[in-house]
Image 1: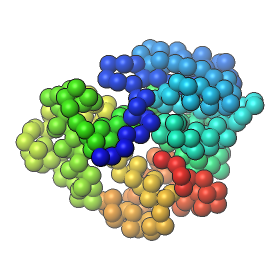
Image 2: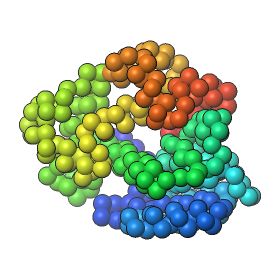
Image 3: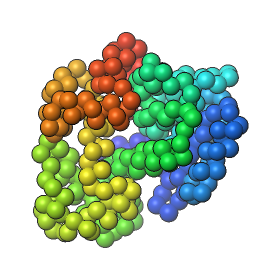
Length: 276
């Protein structure tokens, strides 16, 4: 039986508003973020420096944290380092949202275990899109853990009519990342149709099956880049990219840096070895 992570225990349940912790010393930016999150039924907690944010994360266990870098008392990098070394908070996705957007800063943020880095001035569309993506990915982790431990209709994350279909699709795609079938073929293999399969994924993750597959490949790519010495050519081949250059382009577009740059940053700082 797989151990359920602290994130599983604190994750907002289906039907509940997700809990978002905003850590930023800019009242203007906080006001904009609160406004855009409130219109999407998210529960917001605010902290004005890294120390206060870390303390609130321990107490409230939010579903996701948006974190500035330059702040009084404790900066964002220090706060992230603490979050990722504490068993109670290490699984909470952290997105940096900062004007400190030089490549070295973005690399440092990712090497500390953040899932993304958004540069200020930010656009509402980018912030909301990335928050929703990483909330959905956190729910995938919840689903995977609860499925491997115990699974009942009462604790299923998804509507019962789609739960088995989504679980079967995820398992099939993870086993066939290198040579995934078309969505149409995948649907037929699983005994359904393409429209229903995409609707199930849109309901659960706000992504199509293809978009989920793309994000899963990049998530695994980031883990292989930062946690192993596997060559980039081997990673590209293992994850089903048509060429190393295609993999490099997708990685840079997603994370804002090359795989080589991120690996060198992690090797230099040694900060990601214990992160999720």
